[in-house]
Image (tube, rainbow, N blue to C red; front, side, top):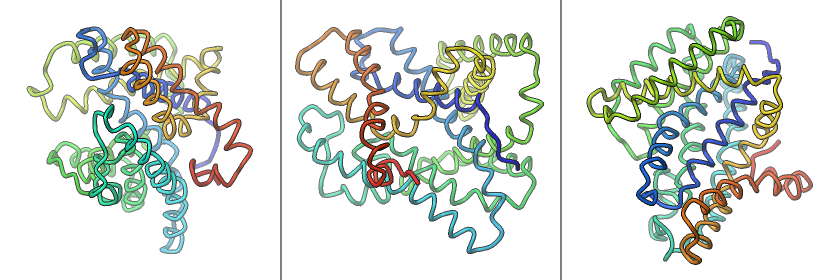
Length: 329
């Protein structure tokens, strides 16, 4: 596959990280007894993580450049530096902060199981949503196994695995690796048909976005998860991801698109570091000062993007810290 720049996918990254930060901006799981907030949260979580795995797969062309065991080892080493070094570094930095604020934490840190959890149980780590980084690493490790067969065949195999393997295995988050492998290969497949996808007339894109949005909204309004499980997760993930991939293409030449493109450039930085800012804002403004719930959401949403400023002022200027905390080259 030829390496080239895809502006719309950078925009998609920006939209994706905005949804992540918004999803993390609700101070608690009660949503102030607001059905609207509860619905927004449910809608975001119905597709936003598969969306990121699709984007990751879209850029995973290097798995097709691996020719031997040495090449595979070099490839895995680069993924360790990019994903696992920040995973361990930021997780460990978060530990003393979590310990200090254990009385305010929804999931207090337990030191007796901390290292075991970080190594083997990524759903029980200090920053819970880091399971994505852990899972993405193992997907990158496993993906080359499928690179010797046609992409469509790999997509079919991973789809079957997605639907068949429904047992929640916490060790290494095996369930997540198998479940999200399909979306990763969906992203790879999308790249192979990108020109056809991109050349869809804008009028047809608006029609698809409208139909898919209505369908996604309906699925999230009515409690049908148990009735059509595991197809519910698959449907909402593909619907939501397709909507925002198309929206990203439509925004390519707009000022809003440029804003999301710039945000997309720092999506990994925001994902890795926003917890520190948002958790501090939640404890300070919601749990201590008792600010209005909606005001706290706005504060947490705004402050969730502070890692961009942090990157510009610190990690861009001190490369060694960028390598340790952000996995930069």
